[in-house]
Image (tube, rainbow, N blue to C red):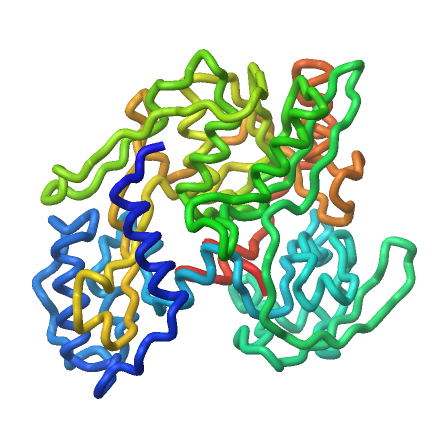
Length: 440
């Protein structure tokens, strides 16, 4: 794989973040000078820079975030954000802080843990998918509902040392209350992997939560991905179900790594996607071709998706569409056909004030030229989520539907009748960098 323009940006940022930077001199991150710098990098790099308004009066804005919001192209841009260089680099290699879990409502309006990172405080305390959350800090779930019908679960910032209390109903009906204290942890991307026999076929089931490179090993590669693919290869699988229902995205380089495992050998060398910058930067547009990894020989891939499947998840689906039979089971994806890289390294004022501007800077087009899926990819079979079942439990509606598709060539009406679309989904609780890697 050639070393591409955007990969170089990420590598340089991650390497720099490994060193202890000197404190900026006279750091004034909310100054008018910083806002001027934000406008300058947006004018140069923003994907929709032709839609950029005339520079507003910087003195009218109390924060950089408010200023950036005034610049973004509202019909399409729900994604641009501001963070710090360290926070950006940490997120893309899974260095987190918090409790380390997600949750969602089932069709009956009950709240369940959906995933738990094994080395996070919640994972170390034994939290598991399928536990029903009945109280948070002594208050019933209904207390957290907003006037619009959504929910605002205020568990405080991710800072280590913050403690919250959770009361759970376990699958056996027993009740337990756990106090859990936020801490720094390394998150895992692979939540579950197994091989299931379906009428003599070996079916791999892979639950993949976010596209993260391996910390301290490579800024553009995941050892977890290598290990999972080696496992499925060793088992000689005939089919593969990839569960992306809670995957908000992440590293494009890791998405490429996965795509190169999934593609058929006959398509190695074909166009994976085109990387497209704004018109002023068109000289840096580039093509990425498939370079087959491993020996998986799959004629199709079944994806389990939801509105929580975004960004790099959708890149994988879009890039495979011209070459393989794909089946999407669950719900429509989020709709993010564009991406970002950080811009502080192009502006001394931003760099010295540790203001990392991460606006939309590029789009990706598949081999058919498809790029505009802002409404997401529609599910081929709409099937409800059932977070009350642990990973691999074949009572889980979406897994059951995927296995049924392999067995019968379709999804039964009974499974389709399970479909519901919750009023609140966890991806809506977060913005910016945290939306791409959502976790409490």
